Image 1: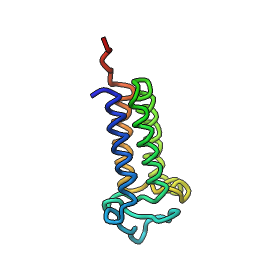
Image 2 (image 1 turned 120 degrees about the vertical axis):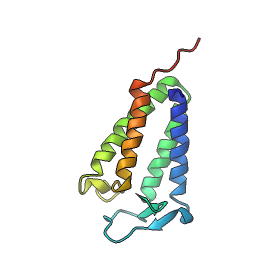
Image 3 (image 1 turned 90 degrees about the horizontal axis):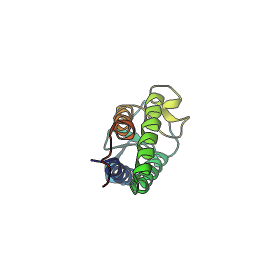
Image 4 (image 1 turned 90 degrees about the vertical axis):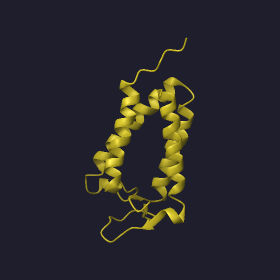
Length: 135
């Protein structure tokens, strides 16, 4: 897989996840003990805390990934950006107050390991993977 394909796949997945967060059958109410967040805090697939702003961010990352997949340079920039941003979001998930970005977006619980995984995959395609040279 090349970096452009990575950006395309990540873009599609982010779009699907962002839209899924708005589908009532795929979300459940937050349980007691969850930090308060703006809007309708819910659990996507019963596992990942989300709200409307979180869904919108996923959709934006999805659109960015689709656009970035059109060129190798854009895809590399996307991969590196996703790696850095999601690594920061993973760290924020451990810090009280930042684990909801000041009440705006939930970043705690299962989001932490998922953000770490996304950051690692994106870092691989952003810095380690070498794209074949077109002849």
